[in-house]
Image 1 (cartoon, rainbow, N blue to C red):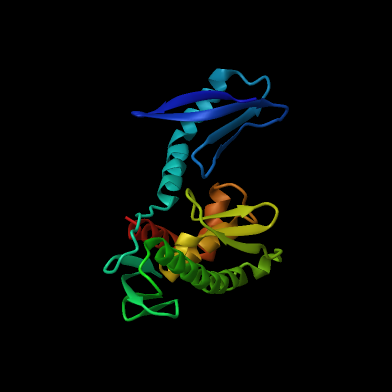
Image 2: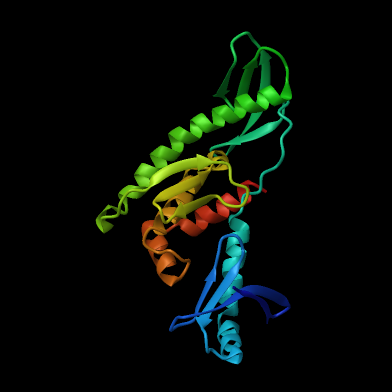
Length: 235
């Protein structure tokens, strides 16, 4: 069981879950979904907990803001001619052509949808299927390229999955799977590499502590630039 608590950081109120457990040390973790988990030994006085949280409040706020910015911002689309769609960081105009053979082709700044009859739901399905095919191709290349940097650590290569995710660009499962958000295919290749590298770092560093960012900076020195670019392109 956990208790819902909060602490002030300037004008901001930070909520957290407090758990008393059979353990020797206190830990503070910020999770990608925005929850803050504080685990403490059973007999820990509450004033000691608050003192520790106040000292770490800037760190907690920083990581909460990080995960807010890491969430995808996806603008709804109507799938009509003239509408713009992103692909690998570039904006493409959607063009609908009535044709007996249905397919999607990207060429010269245009995503052309050949379709038997004009139907927005059908157009959406064709475009999303095309995005998925491109994601399978580009994500696999990025995944293999980025994992090579980790070879010296003798790590077991995770499986790669792709699916739509509402709240995250990627995730790493302790069962050995990296999952990437399908929407990432709309971002530049460097941003895809950043998310892949970020998740691969979790093989060695489960939490977003100092060691995690040290490893991330080692694997990708320009990660902050790519992160900011990822955030801006979807606004």
